[in-house]
Length: 89
Image 1 (cartoon, rainbow, N blue to C red):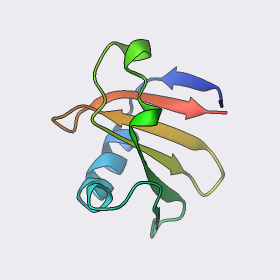
Image 2: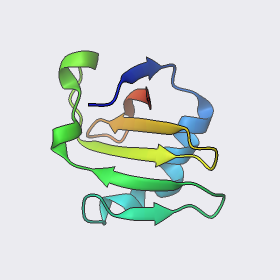
Image 3: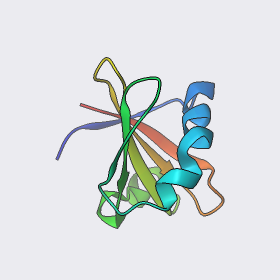
Image 4: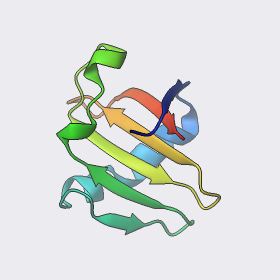
């Protein structure tokens, strides 16, 4: 398993969620969506839940790979609010 480091949720993370939330929920798991500004998103399944680490319940999880190769994993609750953002190394 890759190392996951919890990072502070920033405005840019919230913007990523808003940009793609409707599209990503209609996708099958592990489908890649290219982002117009570069990078891509992948919808992840329940095997990627990290409830025991952040103490909340994940309902939606996706990874974002930026154009420079940084990988973030964003965990959302059932109200589409961010539970935690992890940098994946």
